[in-house]
Image (cartoon, rainbow, N blue to C red):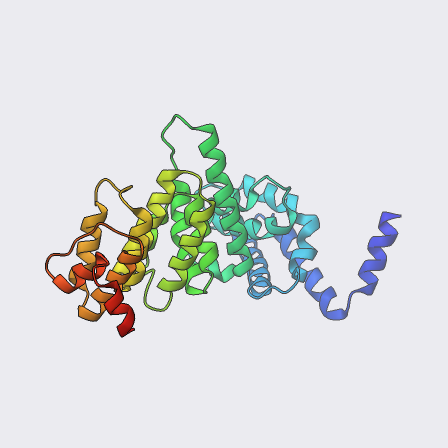
Length: 319
């Protein structure tokens, strides 16, 4: 009965699909060839077909469907190859992509095989692959944290992937995915750095810092650990400060309060007031006055009066 269904499915394939199926099956067979050049050419063909199909996915690509029966065969072929060979790394990349639709739930085979392959140029396999890989990196980090609560976590194998995934997400406006991964892996400080491949370019620039910080602060609502919440707010404060959005930075400083023992609230406020011009200082002063802050800025008597609500009626009439 199963053979009849399979044969009927093959008869329903269009000539183009049948050609793709035949080419993929022949390439899988030639992976086992004793001639290394033939095996390498077969692998290059498989990689090219899958990579071109997954670069823009709206549904499961046909190469992934056609290679489903050969998934275990490819895994076996990978296990038999020499660890130092480039072919084994490329085959690991291919299997990691196939694992998106073929691996068992919870097995994290995407991550398992990708760690054995090339960790650079992840985007060439498509957005969906990078998103799936990021999910498994976060799940693996959480699992290790539960197992090794009292031990020092060794996550160097994950850090390299995170350094590739986060810049990719930020470059493609997937700010939420980038921040979620950094929060899951406790590497939120990475947002203050530069692109690993371009040390002269900051990860967070003028085009995206407002959206990233807004999402960061919204995530704080769901973070229970006080230290994690403090680090998240510190990161948002430094990003706002770096880009001279002083009012937003002051609002984050108010949320931090005196929780940060290294930099007290008064020092943060003075630092922001020193950076601001007169009109910005007045705007920030009204914000502090609204929160009944005890901060004093003796360098400017007018600003100090606003903070202390000494002339609230006068300024209300002016406005």
